[in-house]
Length: 438
Image (cartoon, rainbow, N blue to C red):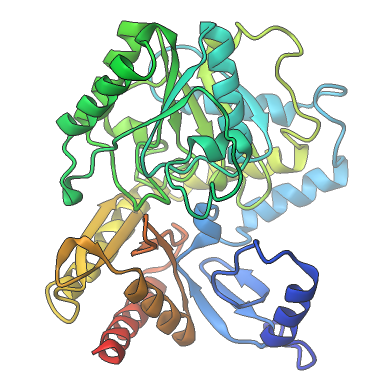
């Protein structure tokens, strides 16, 4: 079968065009140029096939071009593409908001506004929190990633490359420690750090919100312990602040629940949703407690493109697929299989190189270290494994403060056979990278 090979176009010729036409600051994590994709596979312009363990950086929980999503998009395209919801409204926006309101964790009545990207959802959550509380202060966490706009960059807890040269950043943002048992940061340590901020940097009665990823994404796939999220809820309630959940990477079924906060039983005040919500179309949502969302005056929220009807139609199909195909349970099964395989390497060929394997549902990462030491992150080794895997037909990406973690965000529709093939390639790539470094 011809999967899009074009003898006149290669990855190298496209790279040359890219370098000439695009800014150097745009990342290129794999170096391949895609011609076609399906499920958990894609083919580059040279016809080479790859198994996808990135999923568009967590965007493709239902896979590339799921037939139900494609059909929904085509149906909507045949009706209309855009009106701007603030001008001429449409049912798919309303229906999607209704469904997200029902799915959001906690018993409190919810309401939803739609935007275009994860960063926009975060921006609006913080903006609304300041308006609702009448306070300026926001606490985020070390290692967090919340987006690339100026405010989202400020909230992000990693300096390079995200903040380098972009200052001055947005005032009123503070970073507390995030629990990370592997690196010696306990829940108690993290809460003491937060308490120190509220005593020395911003008074608690000037705190508008705490924003937290229930599983840090770019920070290295670190799950927040239940006790930590419970404590954040108590602190926010005690001081009249809002608890904002950034579920952009961890949501939409990735962790075996629709939202990762459900594992803790904690109800946030607002939830930022994006990535896998619309199977690759630009869409995000901010779902919050109705009483709070209604505190924003008419005209105080909106977006020209936000809640585009084609993206909304795709999102409704995504929710159907997650339910009909049992993808929450599938996320758990995938996570167990990947973690089992990576831990076997950790105890075998990659002993002393794979320091920790972290898994919650289908969100899995392995951390590369030197000499088995958690305090010696080995981003160079992670990069070598990533390159070896790519050459063998498996796409991976990294995470962590030193890009030392390799993460798995494979589509949840991947078959067992394809998953096992990808894990075999990963094992071969790991052994080759270790051998070449010996």
